[in-house]
Length: 88
Image 1: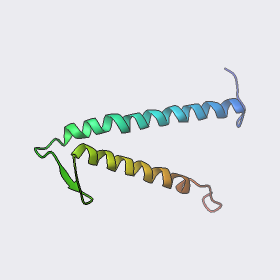
Image 2: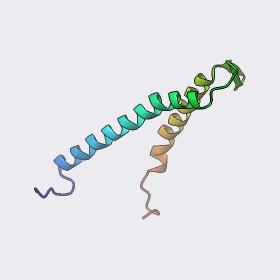
Image 3: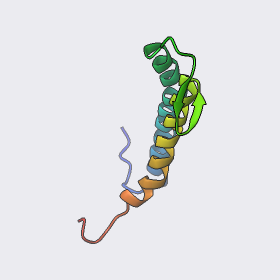
C-alpha cells in the first residue's frame, strides 16, 4: 500500500470526494425518506393543521420544519466550526 503524505493533493481530493458523497447521502435521506416516514407515522384523521398562523397539510409542515433545521445548520456550522486560539 502506498504511503501518502499528510496534506498531499491526492489525499485532500480523496477526503473532499468522501465528504461530498457523505453529504449527498445524508441530504437524500433527510429530504426524501424522512418526510415519507413521518407522514406515515403521524397520519391523523384531520387533513390540515394550523401552524405559524397558516393552515396546511401535515406533510407540508414536516417539510417546512426540516428545511428550517437545514438552514439553521447551514448558517451555524461555519460559526461553530471556526478554529480559535483559545480552543487549542
